[in-house]
Length: 203
Image 1: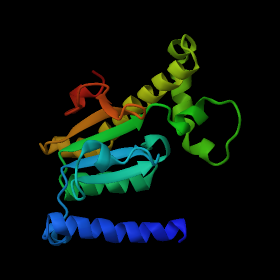
Image 2 (image 1 turned 180 degrees about the vertical axis):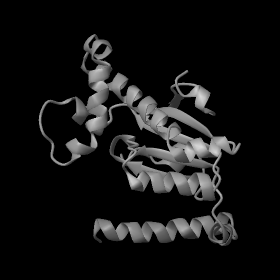
Image 3 (image 1 turned 60 degrees about the vertical axis):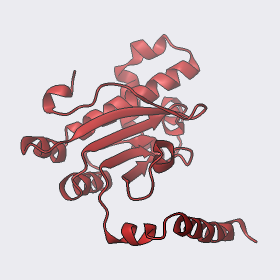
Image 4 (image 1 turned 135 degrees about the horizontal axis):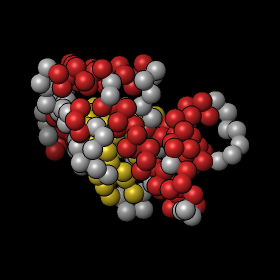
């Protein structure tokens, strides 16, 4: 059996297991989507949103890209954010990065990687903004700190979108969270208090 065929077999086993434990699970799941959370995370296969938060399918609306970047010119992430906030009415947007992120590491390196370099440009800008702090750190510590700085920066980008500003303006309950995940421990850590209004953005 080819490895790709195992995915279909695994799916059948998983679906059967879910039906045995909860016969109405898929019926309920198919009827509506009403997650409370939007997860903006890294594409890294080791950071699956539902699994590491212990939530079943249907509980987290997910957008992932390399290094969990939120660019104001990226209509993909903006479309996901707008749908989550305006239609699904999520109450929490979680921007989650992880230590040892390959995308962040690539942004630190002084050679070309291809088209990904254009995507990572905002993280390269962060290295210049925080060059004094980063220059005092060793390689692994420097990478970890840049991973943290990147999460904080991308969460600020989310908070400054017109989508989120308009939601706050109309009194909608919405908080932006900055989390980081440690692969070798499986632990999520908040990097700052949630941002729940314009006044919180730079605090």
